[in-house]
Image (cartoon, rainbow, N blue to C red):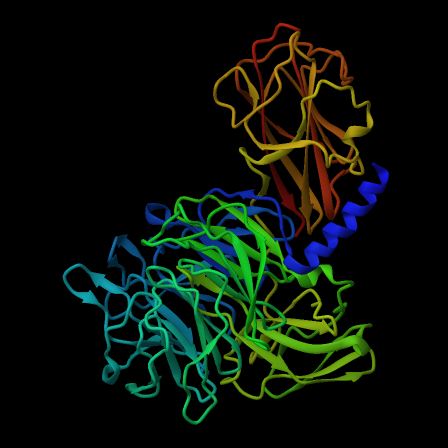
Amino acid sequence: MLALALLVAPVAAAQDSVVGRWGPLMSWPEPAVHAHLLPTGKVMFFPEFEAGDTARTWDPVSGVIQVLPRPGHNIFCSGHSFLGDGRLLVTGGHISSDVGLKDVVLYDAFTNTWRDAPDMNAARWYPTNTTLATGEVLVIAGNIDHDAGSNTLPQVYQPATNTWRNLTSARRELPYYPWLFTAPDGRVFYAGYRTECGWLDPRGTGAWSSCPPKRYGSRSYGNAVMYDEGRILILGGSDPPKATAETIDLRESSPVWRATGAMSRGRRQQNATILPDGKVLVTGGSGGSGFDNKSVPVRAAELWDPATGRWTVLASESRYRGYHSTALLLPDGRVLSAGGRGEKSAQVYSPPYLFKGARPSLSTAPASVEYGATFTVGTPDAASLARVTLVRLSSVTHSNNMEQRFVPLAFTVASGGVSVTAPADSRRAPPGYYLLFLLNGQGVPSVGHILRVGGSGAPPPPPPPTDPARVISFGATWRYDDRGVDLGSGWTAPGFNDAAWKTGPAQLGYGDGDEATALYRATPRQPSYYFRKTVRLDKPITEARLRVLFDDGVGVWVNGKLLYQRNMGNGTAYGAWASGTSGDNAVLTATLPLSPNPFVVGDNVVAVMVKQANSTSSDVSFDLELSLTPAP
């Protein structure tokens, strides 16, 4: 058995280096139908339909989800992109299906505030935002209502004056959420999803010009990605779903579409994400005919290599991600995949490059750089580096990432690191925030550094939090041991190995009929049940508030320190019964003592014991909510 165990770990590691690995499924309060990587490193998301006036952030380091101030109207089915200073411009919104809003708001992640901007000419439902080389934002398409139909007037938001410029010479009916990219010559390229494509000159009152049609026709709910400077990949989509893909190089004097490798199977409603190495990861989607056919899910991810044009099938996701799903690159090089219609969950994917050896260290880098400037990035691994790249922060919905783009950078080895040359001008990289990566010869990326390109000075720091952040919500998934075995006293310690424990969402228990996870019901009853959960923090904690549902006794430890107990007068040993009873599904609230403070920056283990009152108890219940206030 020992020999077998020793063999399993290397085999698993080898498989991970080929197909990657999906992390545990996370329960979220709402579907992430719109998702954005903010310049603070957090992910902002907002849900669908009537809940679209509520936005939240998820911290990929701590796992904390926090409710944001309300934007003032329903921003579901809006367009969105980042300004040069990092503010998110959100255009249009939702009254009902095919009926939009003309409202516009700006979200500032550094101050956690919304601000109204001037209304557009008319409503837009499913518009696309495209940040231009000038730092302005083109807003195009979207439906007004059932009678007026599509909004055919392209408009350019001018942040310097907080005004709109109408492209009256460029009126055009376009599909919902059209795919648009700022090209290397400063024009905007319309890539679909219809068979047609085109060029829009956004100067003055605007002008359209044509381009060759695609090789494989229309691609509704497919994807388009600028995977390199001026190079675009489109893939999948249509009904029935296509497996084909094609590319175009906008830098050519007469660009044409060329076939590239096809995916292993057709899919629509999927997401495509640019990785730090310039490869394109495709996740989710349906392989069946129809608008959003959940009965034919495509759970295996695929990876496209622009150097070969070939696809590699990767690890499979736990849930179906189709219509209303999102995916985006995180600063640490992993990929968040979330949402779907009514799907209140998320999962994080670690690509194969994270299992191919040590990551390059990125120790220092500037907060911002100007175009054409040379800047130093500190790293002890300079000699092993093969590439330095930028990936623009994502803003994605409905299979359309309106912001991501890949920019390779020239570099030379220098004392203490590498000397890197910023993009020459804003046509290569529109002003705003990007993830800066160092990659070694094995293609392993560093953790990304958030860098402002084309902006003077560092952004203001985020304000001190005023509200506690919920790090564990009711309904969260826990590890648990219900075998009726005495684990001694060491089970509360961070280093205790709970890998063999079962996992399940709360409420956990039996006997009340409202359990999400049923615990083992021994006869006679066992006195104690064990639960553990890890919470990752990026700041020290100044206050901790607990809400706990239990029946009959409960004890709560953090990193081995007992912080809360109720009906535990007989002690915390496994064989001791609760010293009292509680009402069914009793919920108690407490502020936890933090002197000395058991919480640490990094991983923290919350351990819970729930006790029965006697050997004939009819039920047991457990759920817990933990809210923490971080230090400024």
